[in-house]
Structure formats: C-alpha cells, structure tokens
Image 1: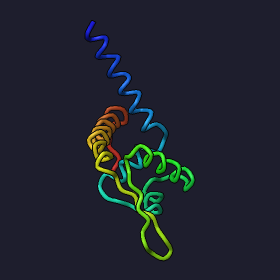
Image 2 (image 1 turned 90 degrees about the vertical axis):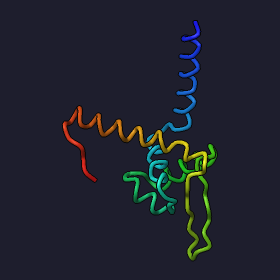
Image 3 (image 1 turned 30 degrees about the vertical axis):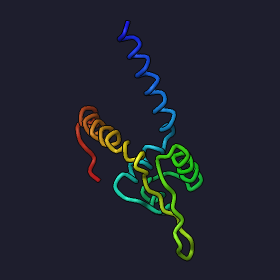
Image 4 (image 1 turned 120 degrees about the vertical axis):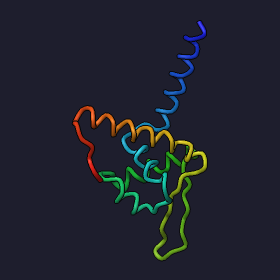
Length: 116
C-alpha cells in the first residue's frame, strides 16, 4: 500500500514539474542560462527558431516561477539581461541529465552523436 502512495506522490511531483517547464522553449532557455547570464538578443540567437514574442512570453513565465531574474541595464539603448536565480540553478543537474540521456538516445537510435 505504501508503494502506491509513493508512486502517486511522485506522479503528482512530475506533473507539477512538467506544468512549470511545459512548452517547447522553457528547457532550452534554462539550458542556455545554466552557464552564464545573457541579454535578450543573445538568447534569441542561441535558441534557434524562437520568435521574440515567444521568448518574451516564456521569460516572463520563468520569472513568475522564480527561476530567472531580469535586470534592466543602464545602456543606450536600454538592454535587458537574464540569469537563473539560485532556485533556477537547482534545475542545472536536471538539464545535464536530459542532455546525457539525449546523447545516449541519439547514439542508440541514429548510431552517432551530432557535433556542435
């Protein structure tokens, strides 16, 4: 009986995580910010295929969930920089595990790893 409760608890926790990270771009954004802070335009260049409107929306959502911090820089023109919060950095290991799994999966299915 205890195992069923634990499984339900885990499934609810996974669902909560998926709700925060859902969408095509949030994990990409977090991964891009795992190693350094970035300006909006740099994020857009780093994440191939994301529109400015979608990036803006996803960044706002990640900020609401306290995963990243937005800083307006006193430059001309004004630019904005994003970085993970301490709480956001708790996802770094998850991102690294996803990357490791993806490399192994690609090797298994395709037979080679893409360089880049």
